[in-house]
Image 1 (cartoon, rainbow, N blue to C red):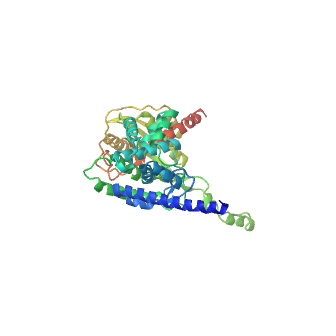
Image 2: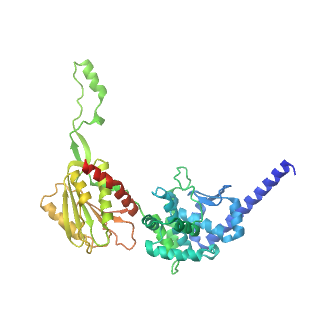
Image 3: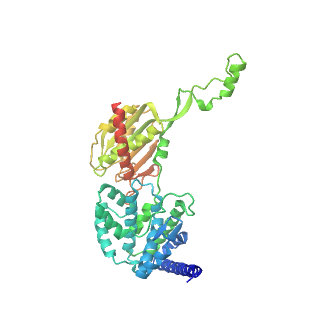
Length: 451
């Protein structure tokens, strides 16, 4: 056979494989849509595109890349494998897993995301995507659910970061739960479907799911993952800026000083500048605020310290400290346990290093607000800007709105927690984020104290 004939035969074969792989993916898509019609918008947003040599499937948020040879081989071995991988990659997008690749340990995030998606699929008991190893996977998930407290990606990621998985344990989890490739999860600016657009899609999925599963079981994990994916995320640093007051610093204000006119006067009017430099400038600086710490039994000491350090680092890094500050760190469970007054950065450093947590009883937020009013009556504050309350959220909120800003900072989202009062702000802090702050600042604070 001539080289030209071989090339022609290869092109025909490639065209046939491409056509067959497209038909297989179309069939898999129809299977998903018939079983889970609330995913129609998500399916429409993720466009299949051939990528030879990939060796599997991989989604980047806009495109589902697939290797046609892999698709046909897997479909021939078991048609459910391709449909399962298609659904797996699709749910990664619905849950925004590929948009959160800034996690510190991406290999653990990959694993946690795969387990979260697979637990969702297995719980729905879909016959057309069921695989032989799924019984073993379900047994493994039962144990993990009890140990991790849930099967969402964030909870599993936190659990894996605290547990030292052996190489064999990790290999076994990957064998059971890894279905697609995550090679395109790196951040990309040119995506056709952005995270914001996926959020809208996921919100619709969540709304459609309620009517689709009304009176049915088997979608609890899907609902929890959707809640985790679609919840609002707040910029804690931006919220802290609301706790600033305008003051005057006696420093040179270079931004409002024009050197051209200044030198022109020196040269032409006998060393007399036309404009003197402004001596004062306005600056937003934190002056007076309260940090309230819920020391009930459910708030762990390590996490509380990490929250204080995160707040401290945000304030200090943005130069929001006066040389003299007035911060009260109030510890409270069902009653006020202690009040530590901080007037300098050095005192803040010492408290972070040696401060003790007290209490660990039940939770009631009201005593802190009453105590702050007592401090104000005693003229302890001149211009109290706000109060930050770090808590698990299980307590009694005050009914009366104070005349200063209030933030309730929670560790992770909890759908069973009562809503915060309408006059307050809510911020969710991720546990792994706080633990990172704890590690990063441990040496820094000690170094500053020694100097």
